Image (cartoon, rainbow, N blue to C red; front, side):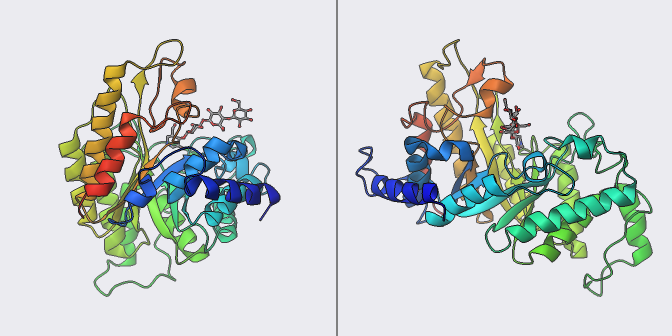
Length: 383
Ligand code: G3I
């Protein structure tokens, strides 16, 4: 363990014992013990050297996920170069504090390096590049990262239920018709469809490139749980219908998929919790886990970044209701927020600073009403 990590293990242990910040009540991770729920957050390694950041993280969460540093542009900046330094820092921190680690993400259309997006590769070259990337990154963290967001946001924003056009799918794509069939190494149930039928089905649905990714990750770490992660699919809608069909098909054919991540970036203080709950129910009935992977509830903020007090209470209600929906389904195993302090959140810069204050702690690490609401659910919620 690096010296910086060691210093913070000691400092944060002191905070956890109650010497640092006067927190007397149960933390979120203590409250989650009874239900066995995973309570996580996205993390930026540059902030780990800030005492309040590190102590709050260690005290409150039993799981974390690198927000950006396992994405291609950071971890695979040149064709022959992998850089795990920032990812390793986060993994060391988590290991030192008994936290589980989710991996995010192996296949996405954003935050890819130019050498990849602007390279003139053939389909088979691209497939080799992706296979090498997946096997190198997953292999590096084998036994450390317990769950991977293998593919992120593959379904389209505007064309309901259709796959997004990306380098992976069709520019030049690695999985369109004729490119892919189920791996011959994978054992199939006797009732599984014949190869020709798989080919027809794959080309029709054209998510065969996604299937290949899950098989590659499984080869690299057979113990890791493999998730499909998506935005805007929390409720029952055409996008979640399409994901449901894909996951059901994967499960029927023995493609290794273990879970679905619903991001849960909530805007305009609107959440259809009944639909969220129905959606969790139908996915868990397929035998996969559901995890809430990126929750935040953005509020309108003034030029100083301050929200209206009345919005904070509404925000707390949304955190409470979504957490309740998750806890009421045994297959919903994690609630993770996309960062934990309003000091560091993607919402500000991505909304020209008109939105923000989306997380559980304010910019000074004071707990907000949303924190109390979530802790209340974790304390009293029954599985
Ligand atoms: O890497 C550069 C760095 O070199 C430069 O100095 C710095 C200056 O701003 O920018 C850095 O890039 C930033 C990158 O994060 C890495 O920190 C980008 O500007 C910034 O736009 C980028 O934003 C990330 C965003 O994904 C990219 O789309 C956010 O931090 C991250 O929270 C967000 O996370 C996504 C999930 O992965 C998937 N689901 C949606 C979620 C929110 O958009």
